[in-house]
Length: 372
Image (cartoon, rainbow, N blue to C red; front, side, top):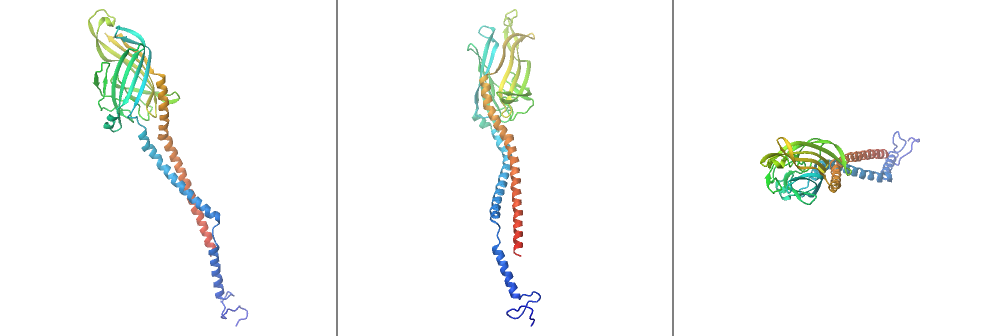
């Protein structure tokens, strides 16, 4: 036997190692078991990994939610809130100081202050029946002079689309005069509000005296009681709107026989519109209504510069200024911020998830090295 090699219990030695084979195998198995049982990630690695995982899941979920929310707010929620109300109820006051009118009691032109009240009521039953976003308003207009005498009165029933403001020919639309005679009419153009939102362009605008729509041009921007507005203007030159049988002497001419005089109407109009709601916050009109004979104006029926009074303007600015800001948020700000923030959160969440996977891979590699 070779005396220079260690002996195993059986007397056989492992060739080339200098150690008996059973002893080496047993030692290797003990080392592997100890390594498996003793290796574990550091506590900060376990806790940190769980926090990172939860954070990445929350960020990804929140980011995806905000990305989906953006188009829902813009294309679903906004069209449902950006509409004229069907159940409208309001009173608008216009004042015309120093107006010239024809007094039918004295058969003379007089100077007086005029006050006009427009009471608007929404016919919700008719609106529900019409459907398709149609609303029906009834305007009752009365004008009094400073002495309290009722100078004119009319009622106008109109239907229009609550989003575009465009007239809809339905629902028994009519216009009545001071005597209460109702005349069926077909409205045209914009009759109560401008489109929601309002663009900087020319629109057809309804004129009850003309019984037709005329172009009203966008002329610029401005503010009304601190509220940003678009301004629109139009001018109607003297236009024949009817005829009247009157005696010559009433026209300042010699004679008492009746003649047919043409009623001529002209107006210069300016509107201040809150663009997010389409509501007219302020209105100004210079109206001239005359009786013409032989091509010349002979008698002034109405000459007045009329506009919304201060209380009406203040009420409109307060109410529709705040509504306009809300609609702007829903239409533009909220969808944009939601989309940008959603993309950012989704990116951060995915980045954290990838880093966690990379870190987990490194720990697995360390474990493999420790067990070999």
